[in-house]
Image (cartoon, rainbow over all chains, first blue to last red; front, side, top):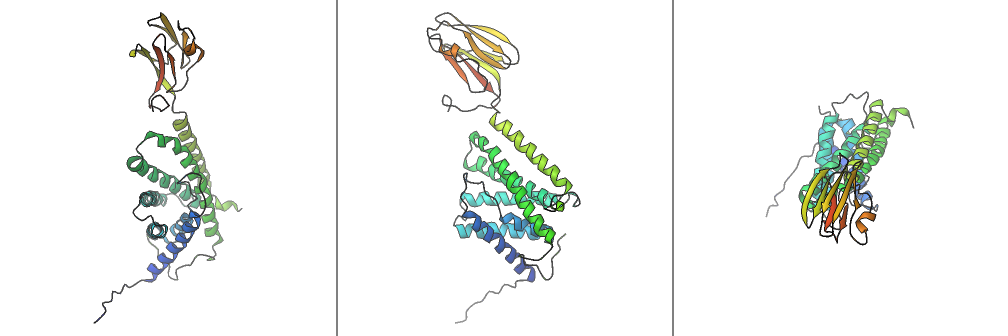
Length: 185
Length: 123
């Protein structure tokens, strides 16, 4: 009997993306342990990794890291394809979309803090849209909108500052860096 | 903290975010700003009046005439023939969803905004 063997050739970039996603995943799991007064109000620490990846390796890599983090995270937390999973996906997609647009902002004036805040707002908006149009189609959701927005502003700023600090220090400390950085346009 | 962490544009984004949050708060929490008063008599809508113009409206009921006053985007029952005067003592109604009911005279005035809000009566 011959065992059939599927071999996937993982490129250096693949491994790099996987490492980053694993790092983001670690932060996501860590954060899941933090109690939250309101479901959905979370610091979103994993997005720090996404921000750094975005600044260093471009949007494509950041999208990979973000979406891998969401899928793998849902597998770890056991909510794959559950409502929470779709909330994460819609949030991640919206924030990636906005991050994609952020790249066209002049880099001299706008840094990771801007990216982080805008992405946080987009993330929250994406989630709320899914909540409203799919899970809880009730205008009562509106009462929570300012709370979520304020949380997005606060955590967006904090995450952006952390990411900016990482990027500024320039040191490769903590983050594995690809030997051959992939520059996606 | 080195200043370079926050670039000039970031401050603009922060400010914009703060404005957005404030605006959302005002819209969603005080969004119950009323723009019309719905006056009912005997269960039927008697008149629907805009709050933007001050007015005193006389509403006939089984016991007599109730007077509804509209002033400064607020409304109240100014006088009513009901024995206990509950709806009069309720005072000015300011937010959408607020309602004063003069049961004996079967007159009520309710403030409505662009968005229907929920309270124990309409829920």
